[in-house]
Length: 208
Image 1 (cartoon, rainbow, N blue to C red):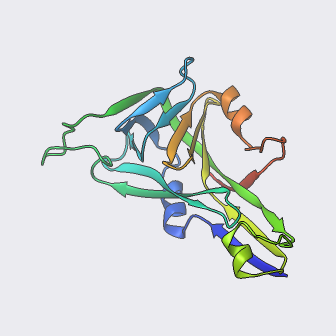
Image 2 (image 1 turned 135 degrees about the vertical axis):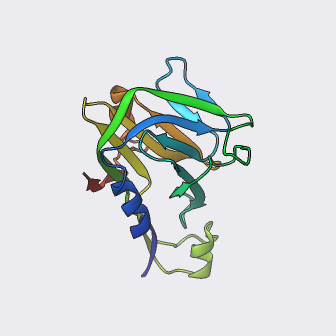
């Protein structure tokens, strides 16, 4: 039997960055493009989003890289950083935005009291007995059973004092950054389930 591990946990620097946001108020989200559902309760931003805060001069940039597990499952690696300018949006030397952009104003003020980090936690298995294996890892290990353990931290839920929530997580190959402020939508989307209703994600960390 062969075991492989596909793991991405947020590094200490990114956890510290999230901790620094406790007590801060979000005022807007910037990106180069967005799709919005008909009820305006789920935004799909086309690349990394840049979030500005009342108390900060810098932006918090949240994006992701797409990858696959050894058995073809989507696996997005969340990436967080701080930056003096919004990501992918042209600005002047003075820092003023001058390029095409989408600006989502967050009203009333969303002051962060808690941040939840969710992610995948599970495994895929193959007995690897097919005459013509499909996956490369099966071809590289003929007739050997394989278990892939999958762990990630790629879903963020921000909580405000008034009970509102903000969900941010990457989805798809691009990947899109999905954002919602609708508690009902968030509760429906998280935890993430597969087509059979099996829960794929769980709560990993709480920052408060």
